[in-house]
Structure formats: C-alpha cells, structure tokens
Amino acid sequence: GNSVTQMEGPVTLSEEAFLTINCTYTATGYPSLFWYVQYPGEGLQLLLKATKADDKGSNKGFEATYRKETTSFHLEKGSVQVSDSAVYFCALSPTSGTYKYIFGTGTRLKVLA
Amino acid sequence: DADVTQTPRNRITKTGKRIMLECSQTKGHDRMYWYRQDPGLGLRLIYYSFDVKDINKGEISDGYSVSRQAQAKFSLSLESAIPNQTALYFCATSDRRSSYEQYFGPGTRLTVT
Image 1 (cartoon, rainbow over the protein chains, first blue to last red):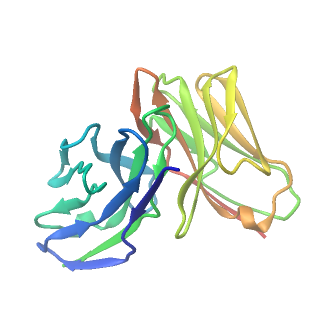
Image 2 (cartoon, chains in turn purple, yellow):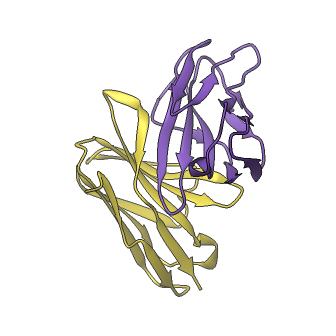
Image 3 (tube, rainbow over the protein chains, first blue to last red):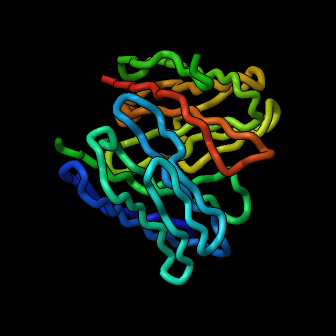
C-alpha cells in the first residue's frame, strides 16, 4: 500500500543553518508529493508540491525535488530562521483518486536564535 | 476572515457524552474532509465528502459519524466519546478542479476525560 516515512524529530538548528528533512515514500504509479507546514496553534498550510518525477517544488526558500529513482522528496532550506520553527509534514496523493492524502508522522523543527 | 473555520477550538468532555465538531468554509469548495492528529501518528482521515450527497468513510471512521448539511458545512459527531478519541481534529477542503491542495482549518483540540 501507499506510505510515507519521514525523519523523526525534533530537529534543532541554529539560525542560518542548513536544513534537510528526509522523506521517502512507497506508492504505485506516479503520486503527487507535498510538504505541509504547521505553525504552533494553527492548521496545516501547503508549503510546496511536485506532481511528477524530477519536478522541484519551492516556496519561501524551501525546496524539494521529486526523485522517483530513490522514491524521495527531501525538504531543504539553505538558511533557516527562527520563524521557520514548526512541524513539517510530508504527504502523497495517489495516482488514482487525488482526494486521499497519506501523511507522514511530522517532523518538529526548532530554530534557535 | 479565515476561509475554513472550526468550532469549538477547544473542548473538554466526559466519557459517554455526545459531541459535535463543526466546520464551515467560504472557499466554495465541493470536497470536505475530517482528520485527527495524534502525536507520532501524523494525520489520519476519518471521513470525506465529495458533495452534499456523497459521504465516505476514511481509514478510522469507527466511533464517528458526519453530516454534510450544505456545501459549506461538514460536521463530525462522536456519539459516545471515549478517552482514546482525545486528539486534535482538523477539517479540510479542496476543489475537484484542483484536487491537489487541501486547505485546513485551525483545528479543534478535544479532550475526553
């Protein structure tokens, strides 16, 4: 079946450090892939997405590349800020029936000033 | 004003009580979803609805029921609450013309004692 595995947190970084949050998936066909972010006390917001292999999603300095050969969609940012502290969720939407997301367990990021 | 609203934002109830969580949206989307979030488990789909007459069970529907009163309103009921239903509940919406992105409400924190 479909599944998403992302690195466990919490991840604690100093401001301006490089961020990588790993995400791998299992799916048949060609799913769409997403990163959502949840700030404290809020719902999830779409951060970026990629709908086919080799696509790169980017937003707010974050990037992730859809790698079909390694079934991965790792989230990266070159220089994190304190305001990036949040929980990050990797998710996929299967090829058939785009309504049904499969979410990873979430990775909490804490950025220290 | 927020596009997806949830009421109440916080609720404490006792075992055996009936409780309803409400979701309203002003995005004009046809699809609505209810998820629960538990620490270490990510988000899991409880129910989803493609329109007023189309309601479907998700992966963890036992103990829950839903009602789609109008295109803009989707409520979740716990007929007889139990402590392991203590969780953060999210409503989300999407548009069939752009099914990839789901828009989330701010969440309802439910505690069953």
